[in-house]
Length: 287
Image (cartoon, rainbow, N blue to C red):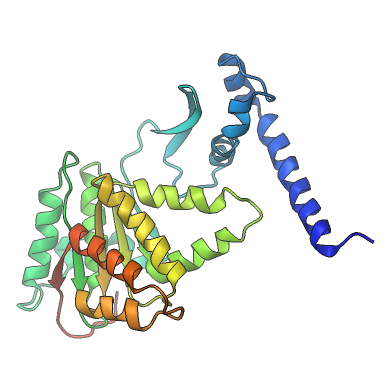
């Protein structure tokens, strides 16, 4: 009798082979290979199957945005480029964010003495944003219900008006989504999801510090933020914790408890990418 482990391996391999056949039989993929003088048996095609798969799924609308058209390119290796669709303006993408935040704007954000500094910092970030340099983002911290997420939404929508793409995502759900995709039968699911977050003009991680901490979580966050630091891409955060409190949480509340060095490296990246700004005030709970 065949061992269960071997049987499962065979099933996974069969599914993978079927996916490869579907990708290589796609009309546009075949046209691209023909234009480049390539065949399915070429080593460069096998090496580029992940990119061909990403193109195939993007065509079917499986991605973070429907505003871009995928295009295959070849320069000694297969890659994919995303071209903004005609007439589509830059968007603010909201993942697992309350509906009210999606239409947020500065005009409707109630100004109080406790909020002035944070609102000014947010306004300056939008006003001074320059793609040619590293724009230091904001680390907005404060108590529950002070409007941190709403203010990030206002920033995202204001940036969109200037043609700047952004993604605002609830960090806990981001980690859960990454974990789910890691165990997906589609081996490209996680890399493609992470790649979009790594490359977006402005990434906003909402409520960082609320997620369950582990070595794996710290590594995933570091990989994203380190890439954005190296590529000089702006990143913002909201949290109920100060930066010092967040570092303490990453170290002390790590369920693995085995890697304090990685936690400190992650915090170094956060401090380089964003400046700490307090948003205080009454608990409004409407955002």
